[in-house]
Length: 143
Image (cartoon, rainbow, N blue to C red; front, top):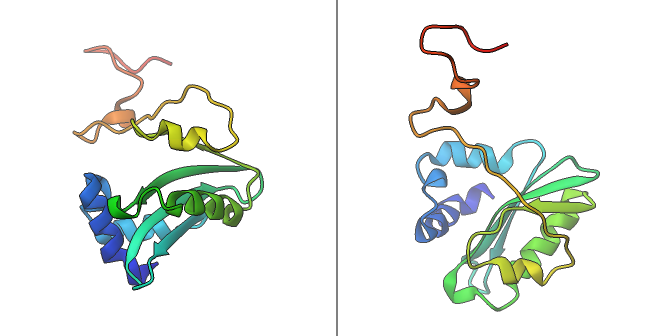
């Protein structure tokens, strides 16, 4: 994975995924952290055409955090192979995910159960959950 980091970041840039392009060292840590399975798909010329990142407990539950396939490699089975191999490598029985708009039909093509989901994020100012629960203007945080 470290050998392909620059190409993976280029794929992220092409998709507008700036979180992974801002700090390559942080991105590498995210892709190689304990409990993370990151797979990279290469074409016949050894060029990166996709990648998947899965977070896993190694036994029951996984979360497909990221899946990108280069535009010119889509509809060739690359994404399906990355999802299948990521789940197999995770050691988990199932994986949850949040589908980007327009990708729903792809994920529906797998055996699945569909349900609601949420993404809780830090605010752009960095406060986010650090400022939770909200405080009264002149009082302590609620107990």
